[in-house]
Length: 148
Figure 1: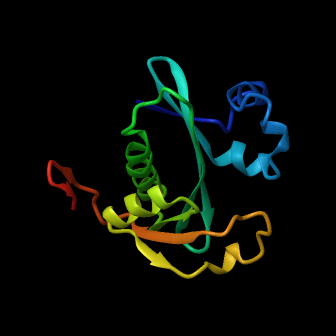
Figure 2: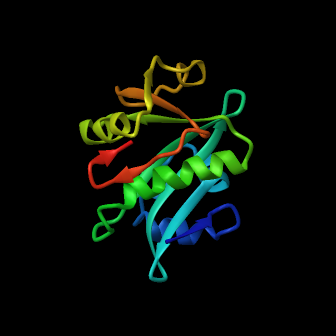
């Protein structure tokens, strides 16, 4: 798995990856500047953005995984986002979830459920959901018995 920043990628590559839906996204500039493709076997299999918000926090947003991607990819992306935020001198990673499966994964990874952060209160297009937060210093461990 390789992460490829979308900051310097041609918009046509983003349009192709999102199969024509790119033009419908409202915050294209932020998504391009802070986005990453996940490359597996020389193909882009997923996309996410890790946008700076608040003081020393990063928002893992716009997670998109193509059909046929490994089932372990969501966990790998979460782990990678924590590592990236740490490298950027961030203190926390925030995730907005509107899916029960993601809520269960984040809870198992010991993310903390929290109230809506101040920066998100003025984002009208956010679907109803839960906000989760973790420290970049808290390691994510996976073993045969589950997450620790």
